[in-house]
Image 1 (cartoon, each protein chain N blue to C red):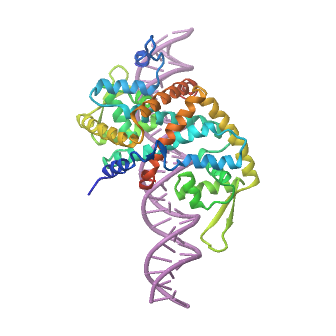
Image 2 (image 1 turned 90 degrees about the vertical axis):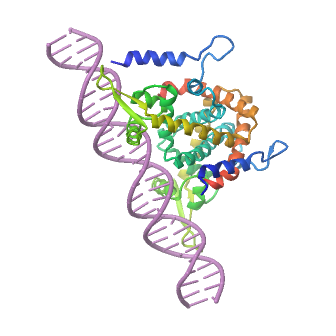
Image 3 (image 1 turned 120 degrees about the horizontal axis):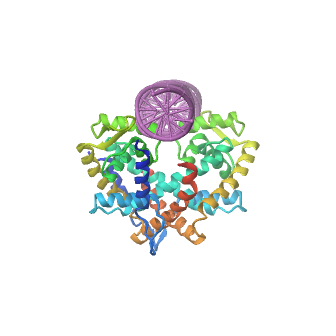
Length: 192
Length: 192
DNA sequence: GCGAGATATTTTCCAAGTAAATTATATGCT
DNA sequence: AGCATATAATTTACTTGGAAAATATCTCGC
């Protein structure tokens, strides 16, 4: 039987280049929503919705696709994020630091780590100086898993993005980075 | 205690990517993540993560900001989405149609509508032909609320996006729309 | 007209997340 | 030293969302 991941990649492949002379054959769902609003409230400027509505929808669809891939491997996305954070920092993290790295609450990290520990993917070391603290790290099994999954995940993402040319992708990354800097500056203080 | 030292390390980490000439003086959080991965796996192409990581993070921050605004009005975002869908279609919707419009499960719609009905924002009309079906619409109170909230929401979004110039916003909307079309094509059918 | 199956909605049950409380420990002030 | 306060991690209590079951009704073919 063929896996969901393979099916996803096949589906994404089939989508690549579904344009005529650079213009989309069909408009995206947000365009329809914008048109509906325009009919009801012609006086309102819907510019922000054209950006943010699409951003949210793209995010949701991309997330669903990669959740499906991770699901085949028996991992949830938040668990994957924890393994990823531990891998990319290259050493140990405390639960609270891990919460910041993965933008999650402490309680959520506690629960996820408990599962990952019982799966033998993460191990815990107690701090000698400060007995409130513990240090989490990947086991060999955990490192092997994330090192196998990351390329799979990226390969799926490549196909998901392949409807856009490389230059367009770079443009997107650049604009989103610029936006993200201003959002972090504005909201980071307020939120976390 | 670990706090002071760890905080210094964290601060140093945050500064690590800053450069003085032409390059970004402040970078977004995803840039730091990419740098960490690059150190661990220099052979992997992280291009997709530069796009998708930022996309997801922008989406999360924007959502938090507008959730906060809606929270002040006593609404959740999913509830707002339901009111918005009913407003923009300009008439009635069945629960199942509403579920499709708001990308939610039928069960979630049932629960949300129950709350909105008890708040006097949504009303229900039974179909005479087909007694399985009902038709939902906004009450006057519901329409007034969404008509007051939508401009507030858009005004907030304008300020959130104001770090980008208008041309850059249009570029973003365009690129995201192109991406969204390809993602929806058959991925939407396959997954959602 | 009457089953068999299809469809619309709701309900049930469970998984997962958070805020707030709790526990345990460390730090700072006097 | 000793107590008030701060911090790290976990636990608890509660909320929300979805998948699947349940309910109610319709439609089609005979």
